[in-house]
Length: 127
Image 1 (cartoon, rainbow, N blue to C red):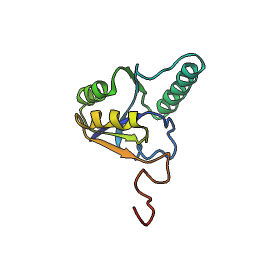
Image 2 (image 1 turned 90 degrees about the horizontal axis):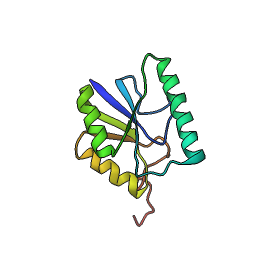
Image 3 (image 1 turned 60 degrees about the horizontal axis):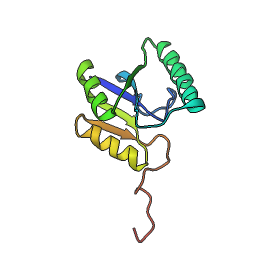
Image 4 (image 1 turned 60 degrees about the vertical axis):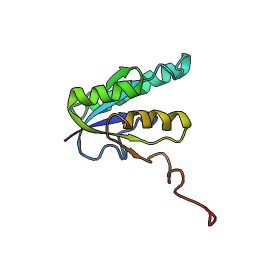
């Protein structure tokens, strides 16, 4: 079973729950709606090159696409025959809306790697 490992904020290979030994196609989508200028852009490019180099050590390559993830992720999944996409979850309203749009088109499995618990998992006694 082929799975897309959709990298977003968490660009690490070690101890990343989206990489659990499955056959994966590593993907990063440059979303033109998100600002990436100057030093921020340079840092992102450097980190993506580093991630690609680490993936290459394991015989793969990082696939980088540009566009709306709601269009790009399902298209890439179809191209590579992936039955699902795994990614690390995020809590921002933008991220949640983006993830819902992707999940409407392809099975999306989210993990909470950057947080001890996801939203709404730890509640006070009154809910």
